[in-house]
Image (cartoon, rainbow, N blue to C red; front, side, top):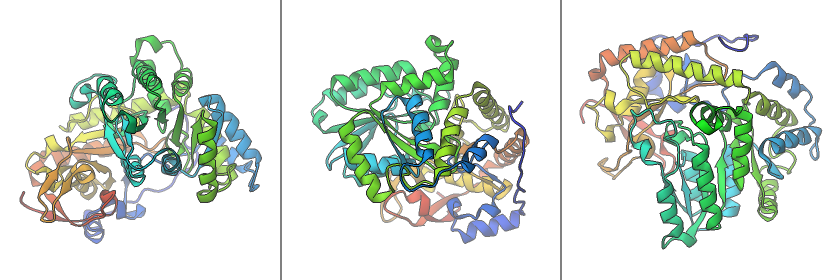
Amino acid sequence: MEPYRIKVVEPLALTTREQREEALKRVDYNLFDLRADEVTIDLLSDSGTGAISAAQLAAGMEGDESYAGSRSFYRFHQTVTELTGFPHILPAHQGRAAERILFSTLLEPGGIVLANTHFDTTRANVELSGCQAHDLPCPEAKDLDSEQPFKGNIDLDALRTWLEGPDASRVRVVVMTITNNGGGGQPVSMENLKATAALCRRHGVPMILDAARFAENAWLVTRHEAAYAGHTPRQVAEEAFRLADGCVMSAKKDAIVHIGGFIGLNDPVLAEKCERLLIATEGFATYGGLAGRDLDMMAVGLLEVTEPSYLAERAEVATHLAGRVRAAGVDILEPPGLHALYLNAGRLLPHIPPHNYPGHALACRLYLEGGIRSAELGSLYLGEEDEDGNPIKSAPYELVRLALPRRVYTRSHYDHVGRTLEKIAKDAGSVHGFRIVEQSPILRHFRAKLRPVTTG
């Protein structure tokens, strides 16, 4: 059972199929542009969508809104330092702001950034710095159906080749995302993290953690890595942070807050440069674009998130939904993680070619049939086409992410998702693809406008 009881509720938006059909037309079939009051179950993202605890709300009331040197900052700083071990902590309003500040300071045009898998905004920040982003997922990640527990690992042989190859001098940083969101929410083993850290040290390249879901990664390590079976998630997390040279974090995930993030660093010179940019673009170094109440709620959330009872329930919810999805006849990226399930839309909708975006097609049908909002992670997200719409590059897999907000929905809500998918799967042949009629040159999936097509 859930290790909490519900104290405050809000009504769900209940709409008709006809209303949802009109809404899709109005927003040019881009689910990001739907109004929240048009969505019944919102699984678009787990970022900033969680329910805060009574303890977090109470901490927020203690927020010190002094411009500089607030008590809230020092409470936040102590909590983060004890967790991560990094002596230099800079708050930021969210993870992508932390990435922008770090990458703008650390990277130079022509550089290379290596990662187990870059997520969309991370890749964008790397490329906006004039650098190349290269993904090095482990070989096990290619098999969506296997039960291998650490498919979020980096390919150590490929990493070694880069660090010893002709472009080694251009490699500026290695980013390890835990868990690997772009790789299906899969965890990274401590063995892999240790080996990566050792390679980076040997070649003088910093290793930075994207730690947005550090606690969920730690929980899965305690479940599946024999050497850590007797550890608590907190112990695993502390060890993981101390393997790295620094971190960026979106606290909107594993600090269970609606806004916030931070940079943690060991290098005082790099930290000073980041601080200067932070002050110029986000706010003074002791608030970083946040209110004091946000800093205090982050501090409490970072303690709550490593509680075994909280993580166990989060894993059980994901397992429950995974069972309902499989029973509906829809395959997922196995094994299910904690923060999201990834539906194999390409397999469910083989009649839709990649350049007509089967993942997006499934996401739109989920909304049309059940008022469920989700996110495509396929060729709309990763693909490229020429001016005539002919594919230049397709995604390796056509997926739909069902992100699970923290402490928000009950099992009966997820049962509704399962029933909706079952209805879709029974008539999968009727699902049609889409074509892009307008797009942005970067992060196109956020603002693209689309139209339905009835043929490939």
